[in-house]
Image (cartoon, rainbow, N blue to C red; front, side, top):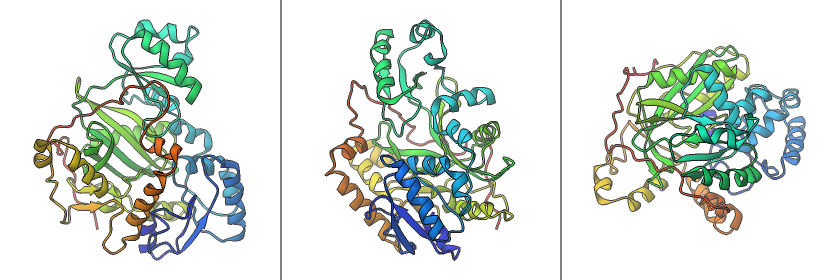
Length: 406
């Protein structure tokens, strides 16, 4: 985001919760401000932000982060008195932020999801839905959460009775969902719509390598030709009456070869550079939409462009078997070329990756932060769904993509 806006000739002011972070270390960052934690001191952050905007002229505000985007959305009416931003109203934002409303919206929009049960909607609660579960295992998932925190595997009804109440006590309203078995590709969609839900920019990309290899965060993505998945994402945003940017997670169920929505993220993902690296300048488009300026839609992009997160991909290489290490697609040793872009790593701007490494080094000295980053939540918990991808995925499944217009 910082890099793209600076490239457009804009003065970029960056805020963060600590002085050590990848954004502050970028040479494209023109001003740096520290604010209270958006997670643990939300009200203090909101007061800080409004005071800052009153004293400093800012053209457009870009709220980022899992907790920061929600904190800004909650006070957007006050924020709009001082600056511009591109966000849906709070009730709409929460329908995307919380998984239960998201999944119910998908059902209304005709977007496939894994088989899901909502005990909170039943007069008989948990006992009312257990007889309907015909296939095990199932997952207990909290409606609000980041990453895999709070997700528990259950292999029978007694497992559910044991874990579901505990997860609800820790994380709030929760639901049960069918386990999608390994074998299907995971996809992400980044999409930007205007106030009339017209698509301004879109891209779908597959996760061809992840760390941990059995099912973690993507470390190598590839742009994919899947217009069917793009249409499902668009249908969701129309049903939600969304405004602005949104990120989607889909997984192809190998039992019926159907892409199914897992969740949406009303914020920028870590893999956000996939769009700009393929010719879709989302930050500049958001800036122009916020100012009410015309935007030329970018709906096509080249297939098989790669986005690599090098620190995670190094860990992947050290972790997997020899067979996977040397037969992966694309080759792990493919470092350069016009089809390869990087997440954080820049020869011309090494600061962000240095900031990232320092930030994570400091996390190791904080017990709570270390446990969350390593997903060492307390409570009984089985491993999160393992995902096994084909060694060479079929990136061209679906109709082909064309190069972006100049």
